Amino acid sequence: MAGYRSDFTLSRDALGRLTFIDAQGIRHESVVPVRAFPIAAPDHGVALVSPDGHELCWIPHLSDLADSERMLVESELASREFMPQIHHLKQVSSFATPSTWSVETDRGDTEFVLKGEEDIRRLGQGMLMIADSHGIQFLIRDLAALDRHSRRLLDRFL
Image (tube, rainbow, N blue to C red; front, top):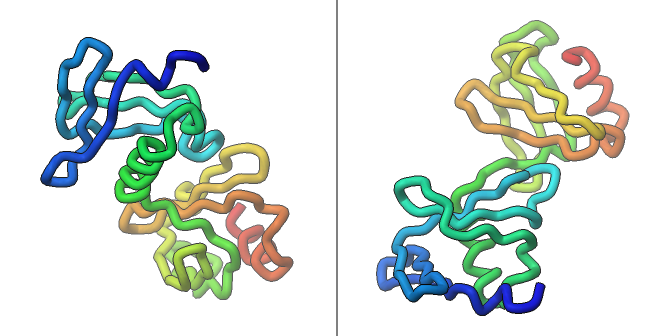
């Protein structure tokens, strides 16, 4: 998108907070990037939002940004977002809820408690979101890509 990059500048201040300077030269401190579609299209549609919740800038694609600014936005998003992806279900304590799940994720092995079947949500295209008893969201990006053992355990809850 021609001219897009020159509309603003993005940097970190001395305290490590994101600072946004808009096309008019107005400085906005402590801005926060927010993804429009964090699961379905994480690199498309990111808003830079002021501390009071007003959208300052819309970024259609993260690739539109210069490398330095894209890395700032991505590092800020990574520090705020925590959604481990489940790659393998090792074991489930019971097929009645609440049950303790032992899983392998992209962030290591962990256990969590599933309070009820309603905490497993289908997101379409074979994706599932599972909320544990503490509100942490776990993602299964592709149900068909799970091994047979994992799918068999999961089928008891779907």
